[in-house]
Amino acid sequence: MTPPRPTPLLDAAIAALRRREARRALALVSRALVHEGEAQGQGLAVLGAALRAADLPHAALETLRAASARRPTHLGLAYQHARAAHDLGLLDEARAGFERCLRLAPAWSPALSGLGETLLTAGDWARGWAALDQGNRPENHKALPLPPPERAWDGRPLAGRRLLVIADQGYGDMVQFCRLLPPLAARAGGPVLLGCPPSLARLLGRIPGLTAVFTRPPPAHAFDCFTVLSRLPLHLGLKETDLPGPVPYLRPPPTLARRWAGRVEALARPRVALAWAGRPRHARDHRRSLPLAALAPLACVAPFVALSPLPDSGSPPPLALCPVMETLDDFAETAGLLHEIDLLISVDTAVAHLAGALNRPVWILLPFTPDWRWRRERVETPWYPSARLIRQPMPGDWASVLARVRDLLTRWHAGSPHGPPPDPGVA
Image (tube, rainbow, N blue to C red; front, side, top):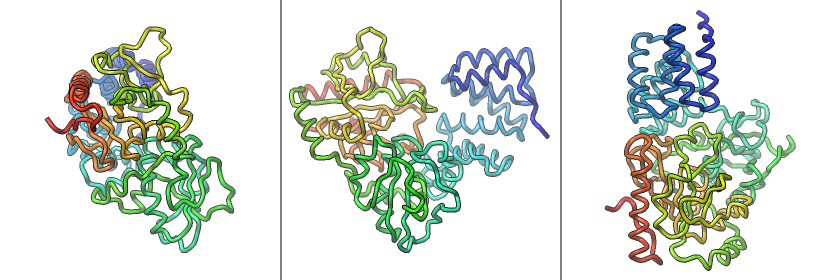
């Protein structure tokens, strides 16, 4: 049966969600439910999505549990219910919800991606990589256009054939998964080439085992088959016990490290860099990024090196910042700076991955429901031995996170500022 068309108010609510205007979407869908009815479940699914977007996770879950129980075959309700359960860390309920979606719509990519994220968060990597790979659409998030599908690598030994690996997903994913290029080159049995964004080429080109790096589509005769970088965990059967592998697995060009050593020499120790915002277009940026004003509790600590762009508001920032963004034109430059920094404090963005890849100390500030790679409750992560995770104790509670950071930094400054940073995992 063809689902009913959304009503005008629901249309407007959906459009507001796409513009990331959560509160407006919530107001519109509430009016729609009063004046236009539930549209056979669509209205309640949109209500659940709006509650989730407005950071009201408990209300979203309560609404969606009840609605999906009344309409067990409604795909939108089942999906939003699964997402709401995942938001609150209820992984068994989330997994059951995504599996219900796939019974209703086999091979539906949003449900496969959600199931993959849930399985990986729970530590079921074998099934998680497979589901995430089936759900991902790398053609929408890749560094280069994908070659024809008949040239896709099937994972079998290359026997001398040339494999082009195309970096896909976000910059953080690219930094995280590029560690798998050397083991791929060692195992695959043929030359490995990499296609990546220009801003990563200088840094990733230093990875051992790569034959060539492209920032534009290579000619068809330059390679025999291709895959995408995010598929390497599946190709290699990556297990948690395989991590972290050799670290650091990225290194800045020595000339850049020396140049940045001269630039930051005058800064007092400890030298702490701060990254409070990620890419605004990221689907979950409203949960992972911090407004600059939220950093006011850190004003009592020494100046920070700013690795996020300062807003053009004209008002002074709430803490002392040394801006360097205008001189960081690619990831190799940023790596050179991080090499000379004693600690990076960052939200979940690419620079946090970069610090981990360089094996530099980094505290990663995480929302209550972080990305799958950070699992649940842990202070450490197998991906990056030098990283420590400081998590929201409840949804939206950045105040507790920043109070913890302030206390740790104050202790460091009062104790041994030339020594390593304190470990957030130690009371």
